[in-house]
Length: 171
Image (cartoon, rainbow, N blue to C red; front, side, top):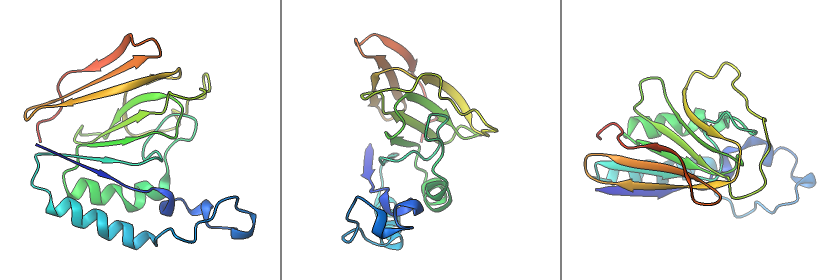
Protein backbone atom coordinates (compact mmCIF):
# COMPACT_ATOMS: atom_id res chain seq x y z
CA UNK A 1 0.00 0.00 0.00
CA UNK A 2 2.98 2.33 0.38
CA UNK A 3 6.22 3.13 -1.40
CA UNK A 4 8.68 5.53 0.21
CA UNK A 5 11.46 7.04 -1.89
CA UNK A 6 14.37 8.76 -0.15
CA UNK A 7 16.25 11.37 -2.16
CA UNK A 8 19.46 13.32 -1.71
CA UNK A 9 18.44 16.96 -2.00
CA UNK A 10 22.05 18.24 -2.12
CA UNK A 11 22.27 18.36 -5.95
CA UNK A 12 19.23 20.63 -6.07
CA UNK A 13 20.68 23.46 -3.97
CA UNK A 14 22.61 25.75 -6.31
CA UNK A 15 24.50 27.63 -3.59
CA UNK A 16 26.31 24.44 -2.57
CA UNK A 17 28.12 24.44 -5.91
CA UNK A 18 28.61 28.15 -6.66
CA UNK A 19 32.09 28.62 -5.18
CA UNK A 20 33.76 25.21 -4.72
CA UNK A 21 36.97 26.63 -3.25
CA UNK A 22 35.08 28.20 -0.35
CA UNK A 23 32.97 25.14 0.44
CA UNK A 24 33.61 23.14 3.59
CA UNK A 25 32.18 20.00 2.02
CA UNK A 26 33.46 17.62 -0.63
CA UNK A 27 30.76 17.21 -3.28
CA UNK A 28 32.89 15.33 -5.82
CA UNK A 29 30.87 12.10 -5.52
CA UNK A 30 27.47 13.79 -5.69
CA UNK A 31 25.71 12.77 -8.88
CA UNK A 32 24.50 15.42 -11.32
CA UNK A 33 20.98 16.70 -10.72
CA UNK A 34 19.65 15.01 -13.87
CA UNK A 35 20.70 11.57 -12.63
CA UNK A 36 18.73 12.00 -9.40
CA UNK A 37 15.70 13.20 -11.32
CA UNK A 38 15.96 10.19 -13.63
CA UNK A 39 16.25 7.74 -10.70
CA UNK A 40 13.34 9.39 -8.90
CA UNK A 41 11.11 9.35 -11.98
CA UNK A 42 11.94 5.69 -12.63
CA UNK A 43 11.14 4.69 -9.02
CA UNK A 44 7.85 6.59 -9.00
CA UNK A 45 6.70 5.25 -12.38
CA UNK A 46 7.55 1.68 -11.28
CA UNK A 47 5.46 2.04 -8.10
CA UNK A 48 2.01 0.46 -8.08
CA UNK A 49 1.35 1.50 -4.49
CA UNK A 50 -1.69 3.68 -3.85
CA UNK A 51 0.39 5.82 -1.47
CA UNK A 52 3.71 7.34 -2.49
CA UNK A 53 5.85 9.35 -0.10
CA UNK A 54 9.12 11.10 -0.94
CA UNK A 55 11.56 12.00 1.84
CA UNK A 56 14.42 14.49 1.51
CA UNK A 57 16.46 16.60 3.90
CA UNK A 58 15.81 20.06 2.41
CA UNK A 59 12.43 21.75 2.49
CA UNK A 60 10.34 21.95 -0.62
CA UNK A 61 7.63 24.18 0.84
CA UNK A 62 8.02 25.76 4.27
CA UNK A 63 7.19 28.88 6.22
CA UNK A 64 10.02 28.08 8.64
CA UNK A 65 13.43 29.68 8.94
CA UNK A 66 14.87 28.36 5.67
CA UNK A 67 11.61 28.67 3.73
CA UNK A 68 11.00 27.09 0.33
CA UNK A 69 13.92 25.60 -1.58
CA UNK A 70 13.10 27.06 -5.00
CA UNK A 71 15.36 24.68 -6.93
CA UNK A 72 13.53 21.70 -5.41
CA UNK A 73 10.16 23.27 -6.16
CA UNK A 74 11.23 23.92 -9.76
CA UNK A 75 12.83 20.56 -10.51
CA UNK A 76 11.14 18.01 -8.24
CA UNK A 77 7.62 19.24 -7.52
CA UNK A 78 6.39 18.65 -11.10
CA UNK A 79 7.76 15.09 -10.98
CA UNK A 80 6.08 14.41 -7.65
CA UNK A 81 2.75 15.89 -8.70
CA UNK A 82 2.87 14.13 -12.07
CA UNK A 83 3.33 10.78 -10.34
CA UNK A 84 0.67 11.26 -7.67
CA UNK A 85 3.00 11.59 -4.69
CA UNK A 86 0.77 12.57 -1.77
CA UNK A 87 3.37 13.48 0.86
CA UNK A 88 6.82 15.06 0.87
CA UNK A 89 8.59 14.79 4.25
CA UNK A 90 11.66 16.81 5.13
CA UNK A 91 13.78 18.14 7.95
CA UNK A 92 16.19 21.09 7.57
CA UNK A 93 13.87 23.71 9.07
CA UNK A 94 14.03 23.33 12.85
CA UNK A 95 10.29 23.23 13.37
CA UNK A 96 7.23 21.06 12.91
CA UNK A 97 4.79 21.99 10.17
CA UNK A 98 2.08 20.79 7.83
CA UNK A 99 1.36 22.63 4.59
CA UNK A 100 -0.53 21.50 1.50
CA UNK A 101 -0.83 22.84 -2.02
CA UNK A 102 -3.93 24.82 -2.95
CA UNK A 103 -6.07 21.84 -4.00
CA UNK A 104 -4.88 19.68 -1.08
CA UNK A 105 -3.56 16.92 -3.33
CA UNK A 106 -0.02 17.09 -1.91
CA UNK A 107 1.12 17.59 1.67
CA UNK A 108 4.46 18.99 2.87
CA UNK A 109 5.50 17.80 6.32
CA UNK A 110 8.50 19.15 8.21
CA UNK A 111 9.84 17.27 11.19
CA UNK A 112 13.03 19.13 11.99
CA UNK A 113 12.21 19.91 15.60
CA UNK A 114 14.79 17.56 17.10
CA UNK A 115 17.40 20.31 17.20
CA UNK A 116 17.64 23.90 18.34
CA UNK A 117 14.68 25.98 17.24
CA UNK A 118 14.35 29.59 16.13
CA UNK A 119 11.47 31.20 17.95
CA UNK A 120 9.19 33.34 15.82
CA UNK A 121 11.28 33.04 12.66
CA UNK A 122 8.25 32.41 10.46
CA UNK A 123 8.01 33.43 6.82
CA UNK A 124 4.38 33.75 5.79
CA UNK A 125 5.52 36.03 2.93
CA UNK A 126 3.02 35.60 0.13
CA UNK A 127 2.93 31.83 0.57
CA UNK A 128 0.35 30.42 -1.81
CA UNK A 129 0.07 27.12 0.04
CA UNK A 130 -2.34 26.15 2.79
CA UNK A 131 -0.70 26.33 6.21
CA UNK A 132 -2.44 23.85 8.52
CA UNK A 133 0.02 23.74 11.41
CA UNK A 134 3.29 25.33 12.50
CA UNK A 135 5.21 24.80 15.74
CA UNK A 136 8.58 26.43 16.34
CA UNK A 137 9.54 24.20 19.25
CA UNK A 138 11.16 20.82 19.58
CA UNK A 139 9.22 17.65 18.84
CA UNK A 140 8.62 14.84 16.39
CA UNK A 141 6.07 13.39 13.98
CA UNK A 142 4.43 10.04 13.27
CA UNK A 143 2.71 8.81 10.11
CA UNK A 144 0.36 5.82 9.96
CA UNK A 145 -0.83 4.70 6.54
CA UNK A 146 -3.80 2.48 5.75
CA UNK A 147 -5.24 1.87 2.32
CA UNK A 148 -7.88 4.57 2.78
CA UNK A 149 -6.11 7.24 4.79
CA UNK A 150 -3.05 8.63 6.44
CA UNK A 151 -2.96 9.55 10.11
CA UNK A 152 -0.34 12.17 10.88
CA UNK A 153 0.48 13.41 14.35
CA UNK A 154 2.99 15.91 15.67
CA UNK A 155 4.19 15.74 19.27
CA UNK A 156 6.09 18.10 21.51
CA UNK A 157 9.40 17.05 23.05
CA UNK A 158 7.63 15.33 25.97
CA UNK A 159 5.49 13.21 23.64
CA UNK A 160 2.27 15.19 24.09
CA UNK A 161 0.22 15.36 20.85
CA UNK A 162 0.02 18.95 19.59
CA UNK A 163 -1.54 18.43 16.13
CA UNK A 164 -3.31 15.56 14.39
CA UNK A 165 -4.87 15.08 11.01
CA UNK A 166 -6.77 11.82 10.83
CA UNK A 167 -7.86 11.74 7.22
CA UNK A 168 -6.20 12.84 4.03
CA UNK A 169 -7.12 12.53 0.40
CA UNK A 170 -7.46 8.90 -0.67
CA UNK A 171 -4.86 8.13 -3.30
